[in-house]
Image (tube, rainbow, N blue to C red):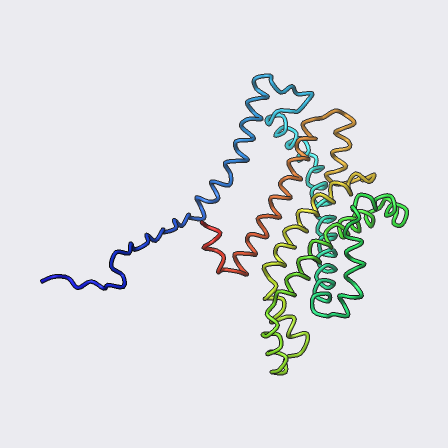
Length: 277
């Protein structure tokens, strides 16, 4: 008995479907630690072989001893708490302002005409250029530092919120309006969920900038916080404490990235498979 062939497909080669290997979250976490661990090992090796002198940069062992020294008298915990409070307050204010302005601009033509040009002009001003002005307005207290962080973190959220709102399907918005959905409910249940990917991008950029602005803010005659520890360490040429403070700032940025990744997994589970590839 001979097999019957379809003349329409005879001679065609069936394409091979490439299966994507799914990597476990544990393996992915281990791979993410390879880079930082390699850097620490290189640092350790350079210090132990004398290639990196202590007056240039303290060794990892000296940094660990500095943690014990500062932790013992409570100075490290107090500085960490102060820096986290400054960064958190400034970030919350900046995110709220950027979100409100971005949604207003993205939804309303009048809002776009009234707000966007002013915000775009302010966005191009480097936030470090405003440090002297903020010192004149708010003095050297906490207010100037928090306002500086808020200013720096407003614009990434504004830009991404505006873009995200404008990408929401207008037919869906119009349909919800036709069914009688109010403006607040429309924003809460249609606009913000539709703009969620862009909002998370804005959150990630704003959180990163909050760390950068925190470093700049804590250079403004700070009397507490990680920046204050750095200033004191600089005066006494303590490269171990300087390295520790730099590592803390880096951990702030890493923690911000972990928070945003976690939010992405929780709020957008359909992206989880793509993230694991």
